Length: 118
Image (cartoon, rainbow, N blue to C red; front, side, top):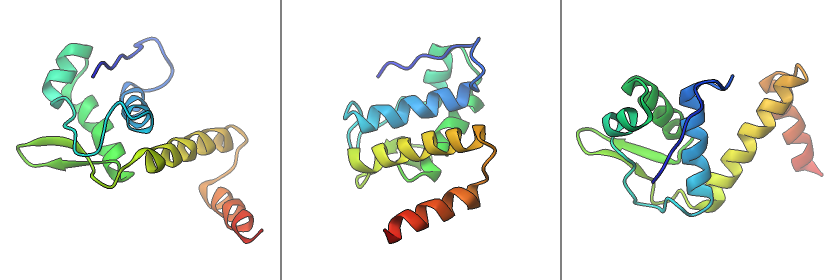
């Protein structure tokens, strides 16, 4: 698995890594059960701090796409198929656009709830 970061981007490095993990799961490049690169190795390859990688892994863990096993690494969750990854990716994009418009998370949730009722 090859990840890249752009140190000159306004997007934080951890977010860049998290987005690439999300996209890789969504595109089927990372499959359920597959092990992600160890944080230390990925940090070295990307020339970033290991905590940057761990922060990215924690972000996608909190979204339910990966699980982190103490001493064994990070793995794509068995139930994290491409559908969940794609919805997660779209939700992140939605929140970015909403924030550009000055909307809060509760306002976005309210819009989604109204759309669900239609």
